[in-house]
Amino acid sequence: MDFSMAARLRGLPQPATIAVAQRARALKAAGADVISLALGEPDFPSPPEAVEAAYEAGKRGDTRYPPVGGQPALKAAVIAKFRTQNGLDFAPEQILVANGGKQIIFNAFMATLDPGDEVIVPAPYWVSYPLIARMMGGVPVEAPCRDADGFRLSPDVLRAAITPRTKWLVLNFPNNPSGAIMERPDLEALAEVLREAPRIWVLADEIYEHLTFGGRPHASLAAVAPDLADRIVTLNGMAKAYAMPGWRVGFAGGPLPLIRAMTEVQSNATSGVCTLAQAGAAAALGSPFERVAAMRDVYQARRDRVVAALRDMPGVACAMPDGAFYAYPGLAGLIGKVSAGGRPIGSDLDFSEALLEEAHVAVVPGAAFGLSPHVRLSFAASDAQLDEAMRRIGRFVAGCAATG
Image 1 (cartoon, rainbow, N blue to C red):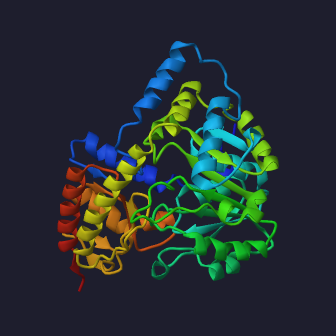
Image 2 (image 1 turned 180 degrees about the vertical axis):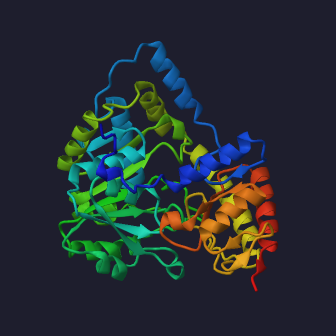
């Protein structure tokens, strides 16, 4: 009997963020003192209101199958969040609650992509967008966002990426991995291009919306261009700003026909989200926003110290991220050198592997995000961990010597 896997999985790599984290855990299990800056996971506790609400939901027996699209209480909290924070109005049937933001993406692409349909993904990008598109038979099309442009997507680059096969545009701002943001004028310029291409859906992934620095405001495309709202899905969730990654609660608001189709996909996959997690998410959305603001301020201070340290390293260049909790330093000045341990640095993958093996610091190579030579490192870690990681990276970089 042939036990080969489905064609859709052939050549599909494991997400690099997960692969690096697994290698770091293996080294740690072997006794190495590893500092992992590979995963984008907040190091703050979940809101106490969320924990208490989940506990109370369990005590009162709220443990039966939930509605596929989400519990009414959580949908109401999501609707209120979109209205007050984003200027978007949705009816309950236009909301879908899923097992994390990743399932929203999966549902949307499964509901709409036919083989050969194209998905424009601005690069650098979160690793899962092109992987999920490929799983559904779609064709990821990279739209390069240059360092010189602050890693923003320019209208000209977007226009050049559009073809008759384009089905989706993914917008992830604040961006993972670069930390770039798109402010209202930037989005208005993109909206003009999208008006020229009326058959394109837009996935606006705003999971980092509350993590913007220096007082920079976040803007939602569907609010900036309400005439395009009937083809925009606005994605968000509890993992980042509310420090609830393990609760696995994501949500989206969008046009009714698409949300219905995405809900149907979910009904035949996982059905509804854990009732206790939904109760906790609803409570967190209603909790004092000052806690989110305080976390953002801590991230900003960490960003400043990490970027300053990276900029002091010879051969490393680092743009200042305006949002999220990642730095995305460029390594062009190190390519072609050799590490102190004798490893040639021919790419950002070589750098990441050598850094992990020799300095025991885990970062993710920029090749995984579609833009090299860079690495992504998360500053969602304690000050002590970040300071030690910067010392180790600094020593590693200082030990790299030119060949020949």
